[in-house]
Length: 199
Image (tube, rainbow, N blue to C red; front, side, top):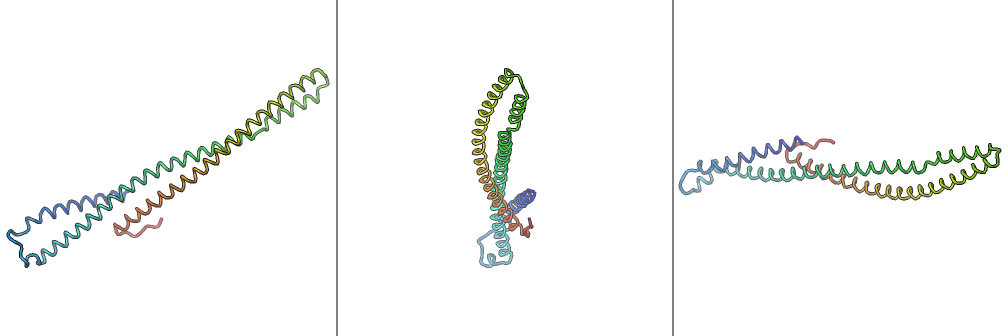
């Protein structure tokens, strides 16, 4: 944040000027008890005005430091939040891919069709019976595999729903952090007397 560096440099300059002003004030004051004429002289009034302005600037600088620290913390939190969002997004993508694979029965169907066609083309009763037994065994294995795939798909669907809900929560948190950072940014602009830039 380049603006933050400028603010810190300006703050250091103001602090130095404040310290110099306070250090030089005793030497510039004539010795002896203060009189009402000296206290009300234009030089004394100007000095008080300068000191008051420096106090105001010092208070503004302290607020700037606090806001700068908050901005840094918000930026770090936003980075962690974005990492969680990226992780959940990747997990959802993988779950969708697995769901598609679990629902793909085309290869099993083709194997059954090919074996059935071979059975219908076989005239030898013994060979035909052997093929029919293989067909029934393959069909039962495919049914067991489909049942397992159905259960896995159900668990996969539940996990995907949970991940999607968590993703929405994390996106909402990120949006709130962005709003807070933008509010600090507006406060920086206000302190510097700059017009609000259009985003």
